[in-house]
Image (cartoon, rainbow, N blue to C red; front, side):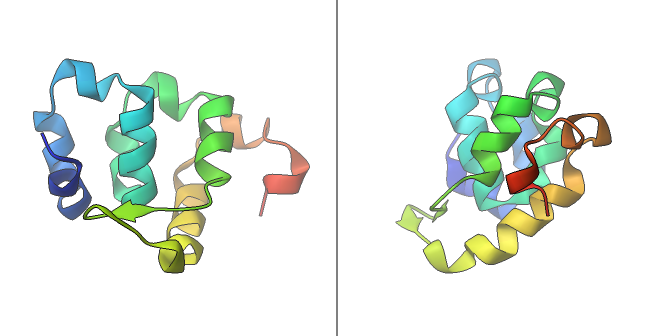
Length: 97
C-alpha cells in the first residue's frame, strides 16, 4: 500500500498490511502527512508519549513523495486535537500548545 493512498484518504489505512500498520516509521509518516489518520493507527502509538513527541517535533512533512515544509503549521495543530488527554498531560511543557 502506498503512503500516498493513505494521505489522500485516511480510510485506506485499514487496507494496509498488518506489518505496515504496526510499523512505527510508516505510522509517523502517514500521520504527519494527514492528521486524520491518527485515530486509525494502533492504540499503542496513540497512547505512546514518545511517539507523540516525535510526531509533534517534526521538521518536514512528505506528501506525494515531496517534502512540504510549508504545511507543517497546519498539520501539527491538528495533531494536538487528536492526542488523548492522558498522553497530553505527560508531554513536556515546551511542546504543549
